[in-house]
Image (cartoon, rainbow, N blue to C red; front, side, top):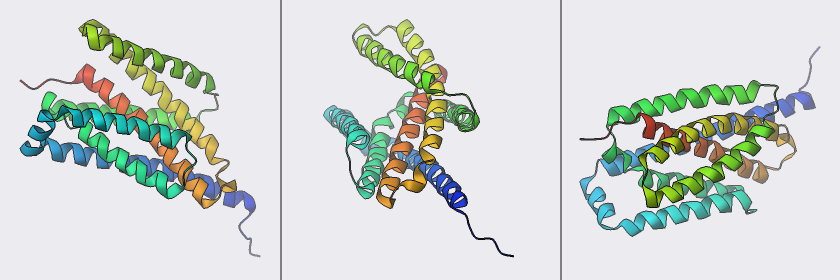
Amino acid sequence: MQYGITSLDQAELRIREFVSGVYGWMAGGLALTAVVAMSIANNPNAVIFLATHPWIMWLLIIAQIAMVFSLSIARMSGMTATIIFILYSGMMGVTLSGIFLVYTKTSIAQAFFTTAGMFGIMAIYGHTTKTDLTRVGQIGMMALIGIILASLINLFFRSSTLQLIISVIGVILFTALTAYDSQKIKQIGYEAYQMDENTLQRMTILGALVLYLDFVNLFLYLLQLMGRRED
């Protein structure tokens, strides 16, 4: 007797495809960012150009903020979302290229692998735990607003103590948000089999962006704590 594929099997397959797609695009975005950042850092002409034209960095930062908002709230096609995410990842590589001039490559590598380990553990926890992490997400959003405000204030005071506190809280915050976002993506995956291909692609990219931002922010805060500066 042969058994066909049931609707439940199809739903589970769709969920796995959605989750793997999210992590795949996140990893691809991180790889693109790393390649762009290292390429610029190893190109003296590019470094000099960016150093003598600081307005470009500000323009890129504003563009990245606009891209995040557009991906989060706009009802765009899956293809458009994909293109924006790729552009965003490349731009992030440009803005992060400066860390290779500030910190030693060894400390950057240490911070990256520490981030990867912490991110992986919390992603697995968020994906497998039966505990509802909604409250974690709510508290995390409030803490994120607090960190942003504190960081803006510290632009004027330049307090090393305040920056240390912000970095510690940032590591804790994005570690917790990684678990929350991973659980949320799994929950969205349960609805994946009901989505049309366009919606599925857009939601995949949005999920990848959320995890990408968790990883990058966790990495930067860890780098501030662990990083050794170039002499």
